[in-house]
Image (tube, rainbow, N blue to C red):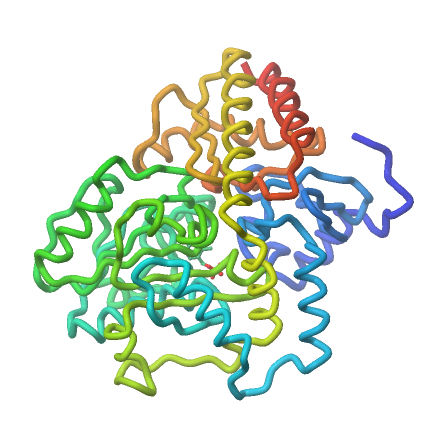
Length: 427
Ligand SMILES: *Cc1c(COP(=O)(O)O)cnc(C)c1O
């Protein structure tokens, strides 16, 4: 570990101790608490590009990148300038703005089949509202979701939720009454469920990125489309991670399968709190004030968030996505060689710019497989080995690895070398 730099302003330990007195677990989102890896979280002082600095002055090469929200890397100059500029003109009005229209145009132009959106302030709200929309549009109640897919922390979707829920060793959450999940059916990923005609919506992360990274098998998403059409259910792609990450058209363009409703978040807010859900003009005409499905938000379509989103998405050309996918590929290949080369069984799946890691000999195709790989305790040791050497992965085995456009070749090389070093301590 490098000695504390002159930037050191506090100790992580001291802040964590203060934090735990006033914030449950010391955090505002459970996975940040290091529960599943042990130890004290680092408190971030600032970040730039591929790096974050903690309050002790330690620098980390960051693959958390706000769980993928910061696709350009931290504090991108154009995004920061757009936020500053917008803030100077007022931060929230309770009246529509031009940048909301522009962001909606940007999304609908990029994603095949998406014609209208409604903005929210988080991905959770977006997927919650997408479900309400689907139920309202079909007049049906039942929701089918896949084990290990995370759709935010709304009651009806928390069952077998992956991500932080899995990190806590929880199946779902206390405080969710049986009635709230009575209409939720959970089925295994990568197996096409047979639906009944009381199903309103089939929800899926088209590339699952909250149980580690699990790619849909060839034909899986198209088969979901066909099964929904057979019974008149709506297909819901939760693209909160994949949207504007697998390319401008997200998993929709990537797979060539068009759902009926979408949720977005993370990347589209340029690092500010944001979400959006959408569909065809016909489906979205069910949303108030056009239709009977109520949905709203004081800060929805917030001027800072839309300015940041536009500044980020404006930079994401097809070339930049190719560049990012290339980085992800090099990272995945390099880490596989480095870790497997040390005799540690590992899977490093990669889809577009998304990367995952499972410590096990078998390919992971569903949540059961992911849990088996996450349960062997190797990730915890790998995580701390990397962190001690200045490389930050997410503090839980169910999260994806997010290289950003700011990660240089040298950064990737350093990560791979570090992984080899850490792997040697694991076998
Ligand atoms: C992060 C995430 C959400 C929830 O978004 P928040 O902004 O954290 O509420 C929903 N769905 C998926 C696929 C996500 O990765």
